[in-house]
Structure formats: C-alpha cells, structure tokens
Amino acid sequence: MKAFIVYCHPSEDSFTRHVRDAFIKGIVDSGNEYILSDLYKMNFKADMTEKEYLRDANYRDTPDIAEDVLAEHEKINSADAIVFIYPVFWTEAPAKLVGWFDRVWSYGFAYGENRKMKMLKKGLILCSAGNPLERLEEFGLFDSMKKVMLGDRLFNRVEQAEFVVFTSTSRENALREKNWDSYLQTAYEKGKKLFNSK
Ligand SMILES: Cc1cc2nc3c(=O)[nH]c(=O)nc-3n(C[C@H](O)[C@H](O)[C@H](O)COP(=O)(O)O)c2cc1C
Image (cartoon, rainbow, N blue to C red; front, top):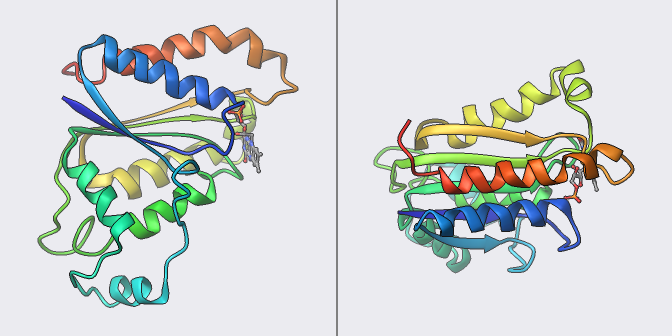
C-alpha cells in the first residue's frame, strides 16, 4: 500500500519536520510505501490564476489543468491514503497548503459529477499547534480546524479519517521538550499502523 504525504513547513529546523520523519519511518517499518510532496521545497504555487478560478467557479471540467496540479492528481490517484503534516498557523494550515487545496482539489477531480479522484482508504492529519489544548478549545478553535479538514477537505474522499494535533509545541513552552519523544512515538505508530484495518 502507498501513502501520499503532503508536508508543509517552511523550515527543516522544526518539530513538524521530526513528525514527518517519524511518520515516514513508521510507514517504511510497516513494509508500506510512500510518496512525498514537500510544498515549500517544491516551491508549490499556492495562488490560483484567474483562468483556474473561472474554470472551477463555472464548474467547467476542461482538460487544461496546470502541470504542477496534474502531477499532484497523479500522486493522489496512485496512493491508498493521503496524509497532511503541517504546523497550525492562525488556526489553519499554512497558506501554501490552503492554496494547494484551492488548486489541487479542482472541479472534475475532487468535486463535481464524475469526479476523477479515487476514494482513498484513509485520510490522516498530523498537525502541531503552539497552544495548549485548553486554549484551542476555549473558543472552539480545535473543532473549527478539525471540521474544516475532516468535514470539508477530506469529507467523502476517504473511507476513514483521523485528525491528530500535537499541542503545546511552541518553542518557549517547556512541554515541547517534555512531550517531544512521546509525540514522535505517536507519529511513528500512526505511520506503522496506517494501513491496519479498523
Ligand atoms: C505565523 C504563525 C502562526 C501561528 N499560529 C498558531 C495558531 O493559530 N495556533 C497555535 O496553536 N499555534 C500557532 N503557531 C505555532 C505553530 O503552530 C508552531 O510552529 C508549531 O507549534 C510547531 O512548531 P514547529 O514550527 O517547530 O514545527 C503559529 C506559528 C506561526 C509562525
């Protein structure tokens, strides 16, 4: 089985990068495969062109999809699971990943009649947040992040979905160091068990 990992962090000097590496180790140790889109390394273009906007907004399933978007479509349809790994920025994914959804979840592929995107077995989100869980729950921010990713972006495109957030990971928080190993162990286990049945 193959996992498609969409990773988005501007720096290799980050906790999130370690989450990515631990998760990948779990995938490999389970005897499965992965492919990776590292959006910053690829310099993935996050903003839609007007042409892309008009195509999607008018529900036109035209074949003129940009090469970089087509490459992502091919990776998705060659995989059995999709995994998003990113830091929470302003209660969202980084803008580059939000833009990835704007462009890659295109009309005729991710939505619309006869969409070409396959139904994936699993969808998994591993994100890191600087704030503690209580702070994220105070105004319903945790639920908002989860609902957008599971209820809109993954929604009916995966058979099973899971949202995992590693909290209190900002650099000035002592819990970042304290939880470091157990968080990475969790990321590793998520990779190792990704394709286990329910
Ligand atoms: C621009 C920016 C916005 C951020 N916004 C949030 C936020 O809304 N909520 C939160 O919990 N953490 C926020 N953080 C903290 C990041 O999620 C933090 O980078 C993450 O906890 C993991 O650390 P890492 O960057 O070492 O991987 C933000 C960080 C930056 C740089």
